[in-house]
Length: 271
Image 1 (cartoon, rainbow, N blue to C red):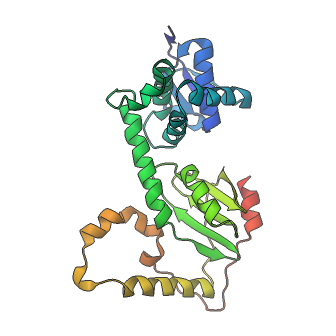
Image 2: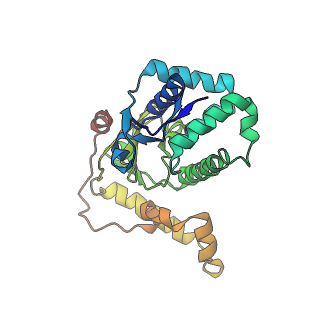
Image 3: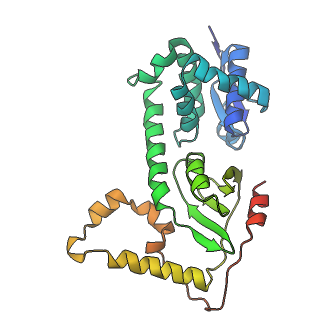
């Protein structure tokens, strides 16, 4: 039986780092009191142990999930890690311990107190990613497509393949201002990197014209007699509006101004 301890694990905040925490727990035959990213150490009431991220350990844990539980569980754990669920790391450790015992059946234990909160969190994150796949509005800056979002969950890993495959002809950047990170993609390849802040330059004349055309189209197809604000907000929640072109109004800039944001510089800044 694993021993419960009063030690909190500290890790670098990455998925691979979390998997190393799982490895540490099994290797030491202990259940930590908490698992926290390094920047959350000040919130812990327990003495801390730093868990280094090692690729070999992370890969062993990652390979064990589909082998001992299921492929569905592998995707589930990855998605759950990127949710905004409170204490998600320690909850996921408990889920994996249960899953290693129960096998594929753990994915059907929806009433279990270990499993139920994670399923709810995953459903919330997937719904948010689905909405954002349609709500993200890109602007063009010197050959780069850029957008800003403010999600509750860390949805960039869930959106990466969708946008990288559909916009593989030009570089793009999606900045998550909630979690200070950015998805950068080019030629079908992508990566996610920390980004402390991102302020795009003012839109150039061509970009302003495209925004105006989009707003005109949005307004033209509206049917005033069938206007239903409650219905609109149920399908397009208000918290997304701040970054949607049809609801934004640009400040006046000179028509001859043109914005430039070199794609190479953004890509390199991500690393």
